[in-house]
Image (cartoon, rainbow, N blue to C red):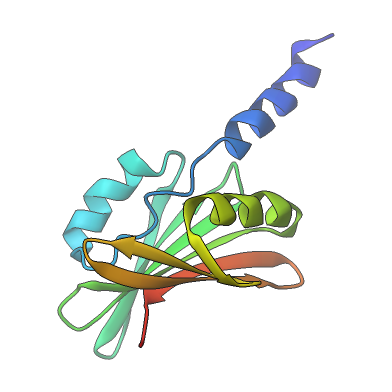
Length: 139
């Protein structure tokens, strides 16, 4: 078997073993996120910083896995929510990972408890991609 047949399979296995943890960076500053993501989320590269009035977001992409990470920031440049987009064919894997990592409260919603705070983890399936969004749980 040639290396060209083995390499895609090896890359797929490595990509599917990437843990989903490390996404919930809510409460961190823009500077902290810019330093942390390249080391905690392997393969993700900073793409751009978008300002939209008093809110902004920073975008990272992983071109190999065709994934995107968005960190929404408030006017003080503190992260208020996180979204990660995946290819739709990863739905079953992502769903299973969410069930293993968080407490499931409905078919598409889980709770993440971190530093005494609860966060809603929501899975949404679109036509071309799926999105996992983490935001503070509103009680």
